[in-house]
Length: 634
Image (cartoon, rainbow, N blue to C red; front, side, top):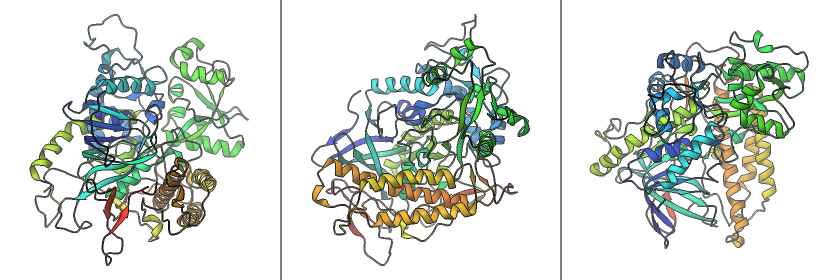
């Protein structure tokens, strides 16, 4: 890997053609599919294996079997999505399934194969899609999930990471956390708030050197992952706190369907484990039982039993847990051949054995765990957002594929397809943007008809009305040395932990207006505390102080995101897919997409101006003022 970006050491900034925020499957699929003539920089908040893609077990769904079809895959997805899938985007993404998986084969991903005598379909690069063993998961009408044992994500990421490090045009920077997206107005003569903007980089915290940097780029791809760590029990690693969603919202992007948090039915219920028990175990014949009565309860819940969509199974398990008081139910696969289980699920087998559980002879204790955000940054099937030059892919994005409830193993496919769609579209944007000299509108008066950037169009929407509280006006320069009240990093840690419990209890699998209102009040109290919790500049150069300040900023952003999620759930007075209201248990006749309009704040950047940038004051009667960047006191 060469240095695919230009460094300005004097101003602590970097220049690159494409900045990708996130080094998971969506980010690396984009990076590896871009023309090698473009310099690409990929940021990872932590080590490269600390991402949800790495931990994906079950596999990647596509219609590969001769008895399957894209039409059937689309139909199953629409059923699981409970009326909220965007039909055109769903068809577009799923139709590219075969090509996406063949591309992964060509990158060297060691998918599990079927035994076959005829090798005539072997591709020059190795595996062909006809070689792959397929399994079945909940909501799918047939076997269509390609996998690499029971550690598909790890095998995919190992292969793509090796390719990315070998590419001369790609620079990967672990432990670099994006704090803010940098935008500029498309037309300097028009007020910043009244005109569209384009994205040209990001403000980044370098954890290795404990300092802030600016990355300038011609285009930005947001692939930062989900928000599972807002909950106490989550399958996502600790970096997944929804910061990408908040950065995009601040930059000018709409958010959609944040209330639809999918809970995986079968997380391992053992101590504080975040390990998932793959849905493929149920696909191969695993059964769910009540530990007390021994009843196979899913038979009374849904005709598909254990293979019903995840929202149905998760709610049924949660109800059982509420009744039995044990905190878990049993998943039993001991009736399946031990050799089969050990061969097809080696990672699960070894993990459980290390904990003293032999799944070939005894049941596995499982309980639902926060797993996936079906909503996110409003995005087209080609990854375009509301802000020119800003693309998004993966869990951070809302393409409309998942609707109200994600069909199992569709997410990895979306990462690859949309990531590669972005790579196909981005060079066109760079050419036309340069040629047009940032004049993106054909009709500047109407400001509606775009010539080179077409934001996604949503139909059947309902706006989420947000409180007027200034707690939602997030400013990444939250530190005011003049306000020298004391602050404890212990308090920030306690609030972060308490927020997880609050979201799990009040915004979990089942919701109610009263519990949602209580959660909003508690979050407002925490926000008031944070408003007065500041830092002295005397230790500005101390690395511990920098870490504390970053934790303060992260908590503030998480509290604001939690408010957006809860408000979305509070205002959806129906039950649909992953959103279940005890006080509104029925589904509304007309499905509506919840939409949060972008925050009215601009983050223009100016090259090499002492790490400062302009910001539009929320009070339009006041002049624009200079403010420090996110952590300029460090």
